[in-house]
Length: 171
Image (cartoon, rainbow, N blue to C red):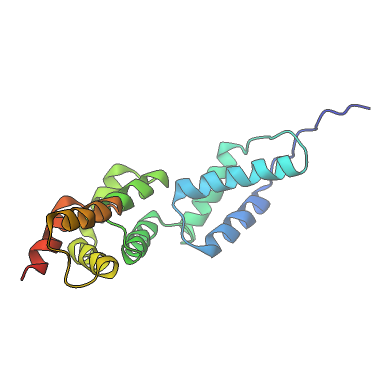
């Protein structure tokens, strides 16, 4: 009797589509992010069943992704817009949002366009975050201002947005 693991069966279209729908029912995903999650799900299932991982054929994966997109379940533009809004509400700036979108497989052009088109007022977000963290009025000494500046930079805000926070607080 051989103890070598057998190859895991390749998931069927319906099982893969079912998994994609379960993932998308939780929250919006980018096309690349969903693709990665489906591949990881297949690898995890093979590991748990102690079987050799058999990659999902790209044609099958693309067919499932195309169906999700055509049915309106998968929409990169909607994902990007909601993601930007969500991260802005959580106190993150455009640089941080840009980096996270790139990690989720969104292209540079799409990110630039979405950040240009967004109605988020990054200066106001930075000001609100600074006031929540450091109180009002904002610190006026150089050392305290630099602490606020470093904090906002760590959250992904641009220097012009940070400078606007201090310009507007001096009024």
